[in-house]
Image (cartoon, rainbow, N blue to C red; front, side, top):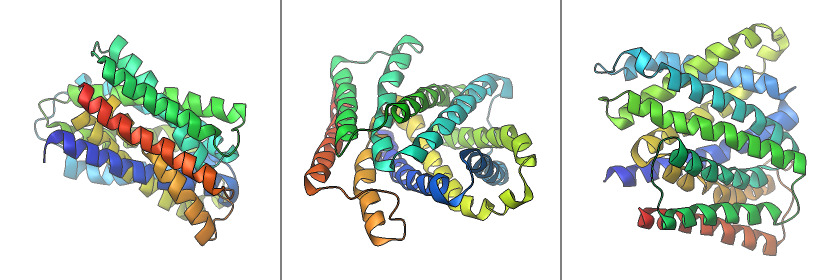
Length: 301
């Protein structure tokens, strides 16, 4: 299997994991926990602890001096935390099947940053792929009703934070050379979540004792998201951040199909309103256009 094919496979695995985690987040911030901050803190403390335990197993012998990758690691972690806080707020007010497609706007931001900041050339056919993915996301957003403007703004702000984070993920991985890209990606992921855990630790110490009892409720989300991010870092290391995010945009299709099924067949009926067959068909069609964008981007390169 080629590195590009493996990267795309890891991106698809990340898309599945993120779709599941969005549903878990929607459930937790709407029903199960007292607030978004509580989930943000508890989840990152759990993720940081898991990554701290994994680091000795992942640590490469040939990793360069920590000063070469420290600042990119800080920037990607801070951008991620800002994006995650905005995403939690957006999911409190809208269904996961609406928010997930909106996050495809991050592709435009990333393409622009890759071009302006990193000097990487993007061919005309690849720009067409970016436009197709984003256009499909907007049609998905308007299918079955309109998302409130405040929620859209939160989702777009999350996109900006995530875009900055994704860009510096790739820089961090490159700064870890000569470590192999996939290995460096896993190390970067673990270091980032340890750092995020340390950042939220002061807030965790201020939580009431009752809030800590909700750690068990947060754990499934925390572990699902962490696994998806491990796949995503690997995807970025092998396939690049723009192509990786176009592959990741398939989470729109996954969320469109998965959320209504879970709402209908589980006790999480509060997650999604019932959609008409016409609205569901339009959402599936637009999400398939995102998959076509992946093929266009590869052909353009």
